[in-house]
Structures are given as structure tokens and as C-alpha cells.
Length: 297
Length: 190
Image (cartoon, one colour):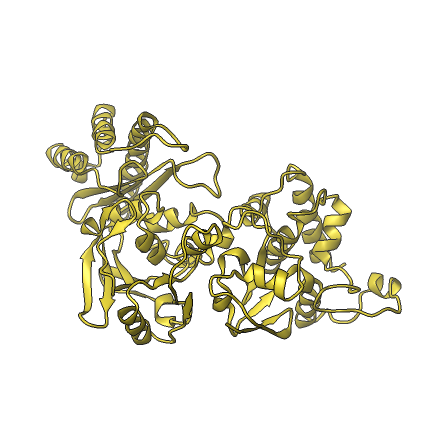
């Protein structure tokens, strides 16, 4: 095994071009487990810890460009206002020790359906910035990024530089099912974001299909129902029947398996429950914000 | 490969390190610092917790090469680390208890042998928070870091800070007591 230690992003891309089989390692919270347990013996380890750019983020007009290695701890502490869904998801990652090392780039690189960041990214809307020495930078829409179980749209010579996440324009929520609050790989997880500016709702489901997925039929149903009922303007309470239908459609978007953490039918049920709850939480928060705005006016 | 880094304030050089080796393995097997424990090797148990450039991490998940040029504090160096921190905040000098307990014998700030205890270590002993002791080093490093950034933690803060450290003996109550005790002593300046 060789240990490659690029000191800059350009050097990292050059190393990846020269050794496409090199396994990138940043926080190490996935890669080192596989090495410790002898599940993986990569020819090259590509250490990204010295590439300082990966630890930076920039808050732009509409998006946050989040460096691939920004630890979850920093997202929780510093980006709660801009990326509330991702900040909540980050707080559910493992433990403080792990959150101090791991970042969203690793979640995307591993592309496990159970990665905690995925539902939040899907719900918020995001693009993954990847680059190669040969072809430069490209942006992959998050909806096209996950291609299979632990598979993503990266080419062998590409590395993940950052993820551009849409800044929240409304309330966001994140919910995760596990046996305790810390150190849990999600049995299933659900992210929901209200986008009042476009009058749309976006969702993300984790651990309940071969890849992280959105519940598109549920989103379309809810978008139409909210529009039809004038909910965005009148700020009415979402009726139980509407929430129920939305929850059922979210359950239907799942394609889960039975495994040690839970059965397929439990996952389907739990996703429905989380969908209903996160919808209620975010909608109540939207109504509250509306009332405050009206009261001030 | 060769890895150079600082451990408990002292420059260290580890030779013949395998590229896939963890920082934990280097500390225990190459540098003779077995305080950090090797249990799960997957970041679940926290018994290998060390400070890497001040940040608590699971040393089993840090590739040794990633520690190159960086600063590591292990449980062996915790007493020294706490003493230097206290110096930085102006309460320097030898505490009375320590002066009373002074003995003429060699000390080693790196392995921790012969040195005094850090306040958090003393609190763990006084509160009976140590049973088999295997999880203790990790809990000490994590607790010490909590009290460094949060002098007056709530129970929820303590639970959160220690959520990555498993103990199978104590049921955590005595550990909670120990951290509360250390926090109280810290705020009273004893």
C-alpha cells in the first residue's frame, strides 16, 4: 500500500489521475473501518487532510458551497441558519468524535443509502462539485448523484471538491429512526424542506431503498394540494387527511429490504410516520413565521 | 513509512509504519503508550479517544500518516495538559494537595508514570466512576475536553459530550457524578 499526501487540490487531482484506484481518505470514519477489519486493502490511500480548501465553506446569494471535508461539528455549529436540515442531520451522525472528523464529502463518496446527510441534501436541493485533472470541474445534480447501493456518479479520476446546497427559504426538518440517540446507523431517515419561494415541498428518504431517494409522487401531490387549497397564502392547518395521504405516498416511495436493523415493512411504516411528523413540524413553523410577519406589518 | 508527530508535548518518530495502520496502533504498539484502548476499531466505543490538534477523535479511525506533523494528546499526557491549561488561565504553581503528596521519584510526562493526576482523573476516582477501567481513558479525554470548553455543563451537555464513549460496567451514573464533581471543583478553583 502507498500513502499519497497531496498538499493542494491540484496535487490531489494529479495523484487521482495517476492512480485512479486510489481510495480518498479524509475523516477516515468509513475507510479506516474497512481497513481495520481487513475488508479492503487499497493499493493507494489518498490523504486529503492537508488540502485546506476542502475545509472551507462560502455562503453565497442562493447556495452554500460546502467544502467536502468540513466536519459535521462545524455544520451543526455554524450553518444552522443557512442549512437547517443538514445541520439537524449532522447532529444525528454518530458521536462527537466522529462528527469532528467526518464530513459530507465522505457521505457522498461512500454513497451508502444510510448516510445521514443524503435526505437533507435531497430535500434542500444540492449539486455536487467534482473535478478531475483532465476534464476540470463539473456539477452533478444531487438527484443524479446516487446510482446504486454504495455507487455514485463519480468517474475513477474524479474527486469531490464541495457540495453546493441551496440556502433554506423556509423551514426544514430531519428525522431518523434508531435504537438510541447516538452511534446509530439509521434504520431509516427522512428529510423535508418547505420552499415557500417556489411554493414547493421537497423530501429525502434514507435507508429505505437501494439509494437515497425523493418521494416525488408525494411531493407532487402535496404541491398541488397546497396550491389548490391556497395554503401558502392563508396559512391554514394541514388537514389530517392531507397529511395521511402525503405520508402514504412517502411510504410508497420506499423500496426497502429486511436486514438486522429492521424489516422492510417497519421501514415503510416508519417513513410514513416521519413524513407526517416532519410535515406538521415544518408547516407549523411556516405558519408561525407567517403570523409574526403579519403581526409586524 | 516514517511518521513524525508530537505526542504529549514531545516530538516522536515512528518507523516502519504500515500505510494502513491507525494512529491508535502506532501509539500503543510503536510508542509504548497503551493508555488509549483498542476495542471496537470502528469508532463505536470511544475507548481510543485522543486529542488531535486539540480535537477529540477516535484514534482508531485516523490513519497514522494523517497524524504527520500534528499534535496528539493521549490520556498519559492528560495531567500535564491540564496543568499547562491551568497555567494559561493564571492559576499556576503547584496545588496544595499535590505539594503535600510530593515524593522524591522520577516522573515521566510522556507515559504519565509518576506524575500527578489531572482534576478529571481525580474526580473519576473520587466518584467511583471506574470499574473495569477499560473505557476510562477515552472517557477522561472526552470529559476533560468538555470541561475545557464548557465550564458549567448541564446533564444534557455531559450526556452529549460522552455519547461516543461506551461503558458496560457503571451504567454511567457514577461517570456523570465524576464530571459534575470535576466541574464543581473547577469552578471553585480547588
